[in-house]
Length: 184
Ligand SMILES: Cc1cc2nc3c(=O)[nH]c(=O)nc-3n(C[C@H](O)[C@H](O)[C@H](O)COP(=O)(O)O)c2cc1C
Image (tube, rainbow, N blue to C red):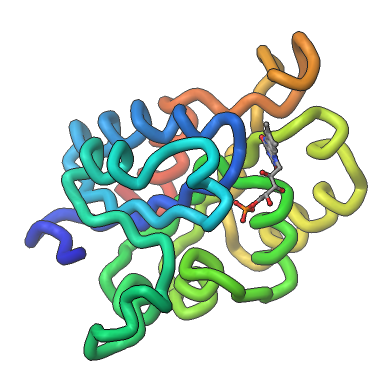
């Protein structure tokens, strides 16, 4: 779980979106750009991607459940919060966005986000109606008003309907937001 020395460490939250597979290319790009990436997946993200794949792309242990890591000297979400220069959630589900907007913390990712003062970058991905829903929009506005950077999704292919707004932003846009949040 220890990031390489001298590099900026990004905690990459991967939540249970059909777009979770796009995290592999994102991890590759971030590492090419010199960042160290620690993946943290939500429980349901396991339905979409495997911890082994994320771990292999990141070259770092994947954290998914703090209770299975109870033997560690300090709670894992506190360690993660301390070691992370930035928290990036990509893809971010409507559920994770709602939880963050309201300070809920029922898994490693949301606990680490609450325990951290690092910049928070959120790249939503979801069905167009879910994205446009007033609750999701209000949650995103609330997060932005509190300093989070939201990288809006784009119009593109969605599994639930052929086309629509809600496709995860392209990697260059996510990278740009990461760099800006880190003042690089
Ligand atoms: C096939 C399938 C695809 C889904 N894709 C998305 C998605 O892209 N975005 C989203 O917000 N929820 C999506 N969901 C719903 C989430 O998986 C569900 O809300 C989940 O509990 C979120 O867990 P998490 O936020 O803890 O990762 C999808 C569900 C299924 C069955």
